[in-house]
Amino acid sequence: MPRMTSISILPAMLLAGCATTGDRTATSAERSACEKMEKNMGLGSPHDHGEMKGRGLNSMNLSHDRCVKILAQPN
Image 1 (cartoon, rainbow, N blue to C red):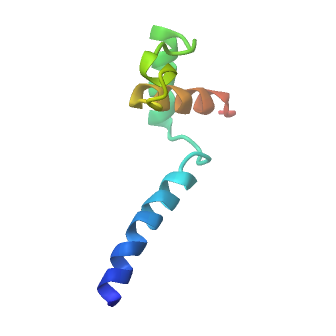
Image 2 (cartoon, rainbow, N blue to C red):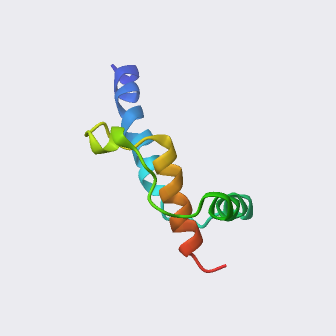
């Protein structure tokens, strides 16, 4: 029984980890990558028909949103 309890807690722990990573301060490598993306592609809204059709965010949109937040942070 204790093994089942620990297995059932694992998804909750993983989700909690995902929920807490959004507000952390970006590393210099992350900021540099975002500045490179901004220089090459700009920060306009990404074009994704899958999201518009209700399929949810894709990895490109998630990283794009993260970069917008990183670049909004003071250096």
